[in-house]
Length: 407
Length: 186
Image 1 (cartoon, rainbow over the protein chains, first blue to last red):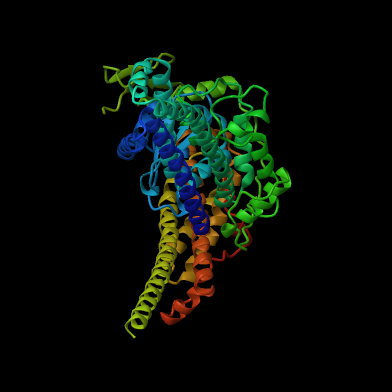
Image 2 (cartoon, chains in turn yellow, cyan; image 1 turned 60 degrees about the vertical axis):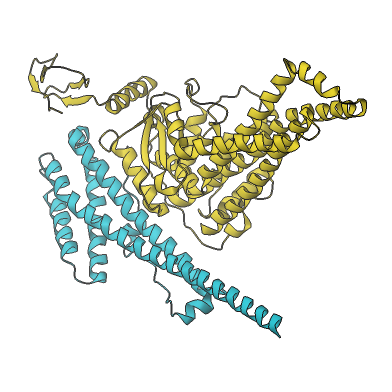
């Protein structure tokens, strides 16, 4: 475990340095394009943008993200099973504190984790996920998110996201500025002398080329590392639960889900989810390079290929078997530990019907929104909204009067 | 003369820092092992607290299962009264077996399985049983990395100097307990 976290940290630092070079280089070139001695000024602007975004995201990044995805903080009573499963995985991973738990009102099954430190992490799941998965599958998903927290992936996603955001912002502003209204300033600079003007034009062309290429490069770097981290989180989940089939089953249900894509996700937040929130239509191989997540069918096949054990080494072997490529696991984490698999449940479970699932999603969200649930003696369940005025309510079926617990 | 002294001083200082680093890592791992051990206790206590609730909820529906209830209650009081670690481990093993037997019997009582109260208690019990299993698993994971650190070079030298001893794994007695977590419903 520790070996993996350390190797992850090293990879993150390398990536951050690469992205920082791209960002500073972009700033420098843009500065040079405006004035022969403007390189330093450009560097300063680039650093200032980066610092500002870093400050914002470090002070309240996870709160902004949770608010943007319309996640609601819930207590144990809202969904005891979710709470128990999170606590089980917290114990299995030896995390120092219980993460905060959020539910998102959305029928598309998905989940994400956020928070810079393991001590102050949050896990959010959609109501659709809760309605569709059984206990083992939910455990697999939560274990995947817990692995992200444990591997410090969230810190990485936050830092890299900021760097990416700065690069995109800077190049966007510059290219826009070039298109509209920098013609006047160009004339002013070129009046200095003929040779200088020529060099200036060359510099300008270089700057435009860099401004177009830099965001692309940054995106590719970002996506490559986020795909790798998805594999590693899958490996971590298998190791925590000792039951790869749980996560495999969950991913299968998520992949085959007919509901529309998650409403509150965007391109920058996409790597944080367990499965890519944007549905692809058909094209697989073409989009691999620009995808934040590995193909879900491949992830399932790797997990189902783990028949000998649940250690990182077993995952690595399964990965090589399925993809015929090397390994995704850093060599330091391939220790010789033997981790036995858990026995599968013999029980065959009935498939839940879609209407029942939609009904369940409604109930989960009513609990999230603090509805009071009362079961009448006649078998009817009364769901009373929190803004219900009276403290007595009649059962519509058997006309029995119930007292509402005052809150 | 003086440069040589400086070099020696620097080397010694680096060596000292290196030893401190490894020593602190060993302490951290040992604390994690101790903490993981206390987690198991917390979960076992939660299991004991949950059982009266479970028996109370299920009793009315399962009039013909007095033997099952008695087995659970007896195992619980034995586990709570256990004096030594091996005694406790044995009693907890029996309790675990009694509980999984109970959960099998529940399958024959559709009324009980439809009762919301019982479903709540059942989820809590499943959660607790899983938490016990996972806290053991975490304890064993921590012991493994602690023992690895103690045996591997160069940390084995420092471990020997400050007499860090190997820890034992939590081995489970009885076949039924070894296959945890086995209790699952949905």
